[in-house]
Image (cartoon, rainbow, N blue to C red):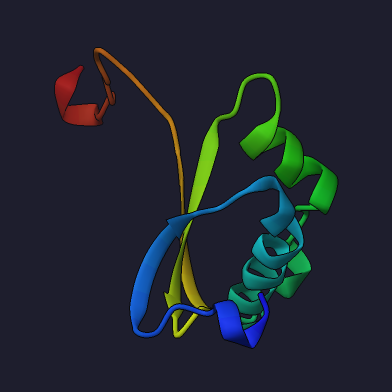
Length: 91
């Protein structure tokens, strides 16, 4: 984003298709911080499909400070009407 178009202060925005490289950059950054880079399997193509394909199952929001992405959150859709976890005491 050109500097003259940056919004001052903190803002939250929904990720768009054009943000896929940035999403991957953030994913790799947090993996590196957690010493888990070797576990990252995401690619730009897999993120594009998961977030913007025919059946999106994940979404991303960016926190921007003065128009520059400073953080992100990713969440995925999951729904269950009932979850049963069997434990030895329940048998």
